[in-house]
Image (cartoon, rainbow, N blue to C red):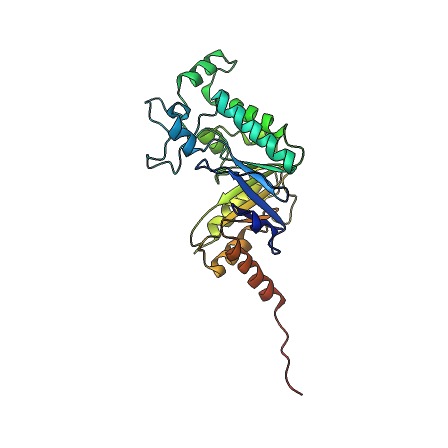
Length: 286
């Protein structure tokens, strides 16, 4: 199946797509009302606008450096996952989305990178916890949030994860314990973005790695993972032929292929691919 990821509500009704994912909140802080004919998406701990209004929301490392967009390693400003009011607001937003449409996708879940967060609140919560290791506390913090969000979703809960299937990397980077959160989500989505997709072997490598990491058979013809995996490709300004090749590289290993942020280009790629697959009959005059 094929899906579209969009900020334009009209895109979810384009006929080439079986499913639409609609951004209700993105990493800039832009917000919109959820819609009934889509999987509504919430960017959880990315929110530049909120951070601009209140710098106390931003995670810091042990040197006090913030996870903000004015530093080269971050594309947007992050929010500390332990901030109680912000977390409460996120869960209310998830609940509002689920009241309009049953399925919800959680984006940008986790701590921004390894080393975060060392704010006074996080240090205190770790000290008050039952965990001896900071990494264990981080993972439990994120798992608790995912569980709380999933409890508010009556349909399918989707969770986006960073495209790194190597065992332990997601836990170290963002606090996502894949095995723990898999008990609360119905599907993982791995965004694998490029602006050209000039080569595709690395796409296949990443997706096969996730398939194996989630407990599925490494062989494409074997058993799929217990928690399904879908892949999101970037479609904005990408050459149609390159987008087709990227799709063909990942879809043998993924439940669905989703296309991000240019529905028209993605629809054109699917139409061309369908036409190429069907071929054509040549009619000659008698």
